[in-house]
Length: 297
Image (tube, rainbow, N blue to C red; front, side, top):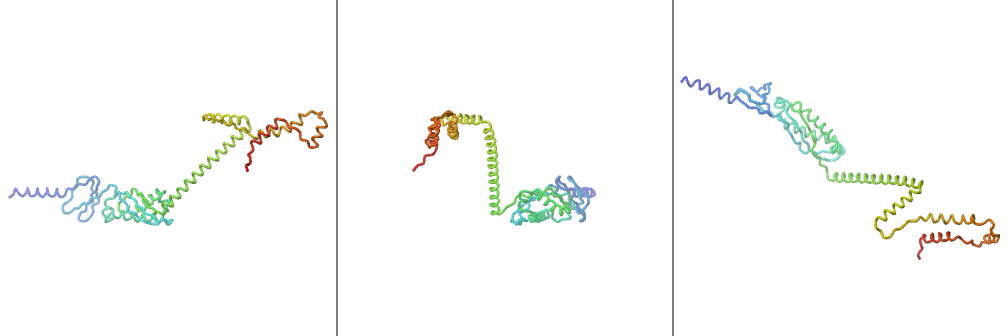
């Protein structure tokens, strides 16, 4: 009978050890409640001993939690109805506060994130929601982090995932973008025409100062046309040159006449008798008439 007593004591000790041994994972921290009071020391990962029937332990996950914020509908400051959803990244920094100060810190963070997102929508304009999100992210992070600090939670990052616009607003923005691109295309085309006109003006000024450059350009054009293997080659001849000869020929005729012209010739001229024109001037004038368009009935 006496031999059973030590065995019973050993069995009780073994049961006490078995029921009092707990394992805390690497991603968790243990909060021990002794007679309902929280012990100030947080149990670190590994084996930990508890007093059976006296101690109770609650494990708190300290990993970063990714929480999607449900889509929130609101009206921006410039009176545009939008639907916005976001995502919050946070982690437990103080396990004791997360276990005591708030009943369910996950639900609490979700509700704060929703209300903060609706507040940001009302304070922002549509252009900010679409293009200036970095400042909105920082504002959301500050709004959520302020109450979360009292719960032992640290907000790592808050990001807006998507902004849903009405169909009418999408069509208006599409027309605006199309008009903007059309404006840019026209400005680029006009700038190209302006630069080309300036270059042509500079080239014409250089050619007017050096007549030989115009002849070289004419020959270059002829070479380019001849390279196309055409059977007919048209050589342009300026009409102004013919008119110059036409004007210059009568002016040179009195100067070339002899000083001792008969008085009868001058009398005939004064009387209105036509003076015979030189053959060169007559030929140039006939060529000019062929250059003028023929009127048809």
